[in-house]
Image 1 (tube, rainbow, N blue to C red):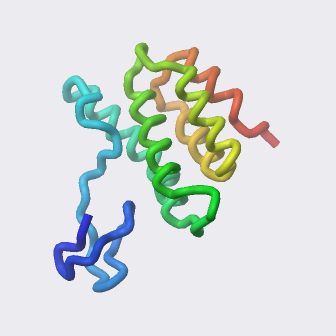
Image 2: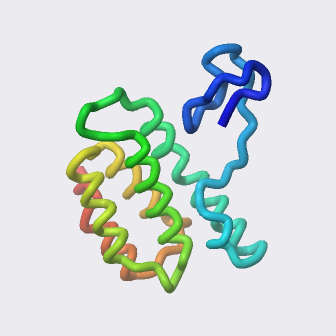
Length: 140
């Protein structure tokens, strides 16, 4: 994505252009459009997008690491989000595999992801919730 004002290439989830300071207008949808099946489902998808905002922001803020690509972290978040949006068809095994990646390379992102997915207003199946609970931090 490029800035409409100065044509500079923008970081993936920039709110403002780092070159000219112009506010970035972007669609608030991280999931694949074909995962939605109507207005009610689209509203749920936008809500899940909103819950994932802290995850995407934290990935963007992370310093570059030689062993972890930010694009891999973004792709994993998008995959988790899209899988959750499948509702009853979601595969808990896939979600577990992706959360294990976060557990290994980005524990901070894992915590934000589990928090987003375990909220009381997130509609996930019991099998998916159980898979996520296995990675949630223990309450203090």
